[in-house]
View (cartoon, rainbow, N blue to C red):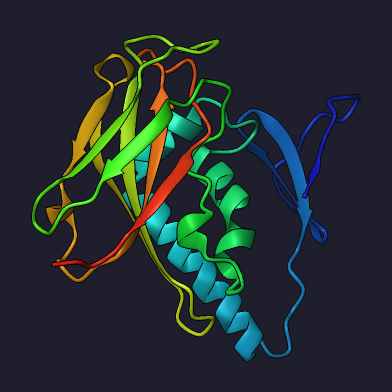
Length: 216
């Protein structure tokens, strides 16, 4: 897809010959008509479409809790959901990468909490997460610290993905409880932390903390 610099002709809409013009987020764009595909249902193409659909579905499920506060405000010339998918798709599609421990849930310069300790518990008791409330360079005691569970199937032929917001607190509280009952007793998941400014102006890089295993 190409962008059109406004000049003597400006932008255009709809189809002209083999080119389609449109406007997206105030940007005039043009793209060629899709070529016909002789066999759109090869095993590789099905895998690509399946992986993409799985990631899109998981992204949609956390649109309000993760995408809007951590991605939408900072995405450049694309939606927050598209920015999240772009950052994560190559990781998710690769069965050689354990995505549950390598997901990118947020990206930003806000300071992550430090000295994190997770006290594991027997289901259904909550996990206890403690951390240092030190503000760092950009942090504030009112910053919101959130815990996330990520569960993915690493099999190339059957990729699955679930993302859940599991708990929240503030930097100044120096800890939070994470209810394990949001998952089944036999579920195992990766636990992440993210931090965001209360007014939404800054976010941190997400941090994988540990893999929570079935232990009841």
